[in-house]
Image (cartoon, rainbow, N blue to C red; front, side, top):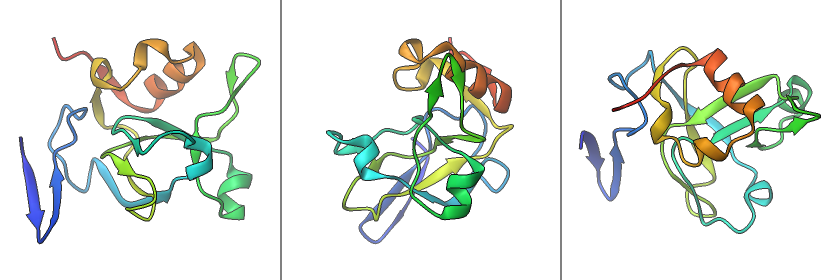
Length: 132
């Protein structure tokens, strides 16, 4: 597995990316995850879909899972998390995958169980392929 190790911190290549990591695929220092929105989880896995409205972004709160109402995504911004985030220990900071990057949809956690509206939102923002 590709990766970089700095001191005690190890960054591994995002297994969901179908292209090399770099400035064209990742948004370092992306966003802060809302730990309450992910209640019951110690780790939010790489490939989790997150979202927020422009109003939420401008207000500055943390980001949660993509919101769906009446079969439609209500979030204006929808992203995928590039690496696992350990809630409470990583400052809840998530590196994001830039829209337009090529992603293996069959490697996204729980992709088959996602609402069809979330799948459509991800497919509209990313180039989605399968790994096999």
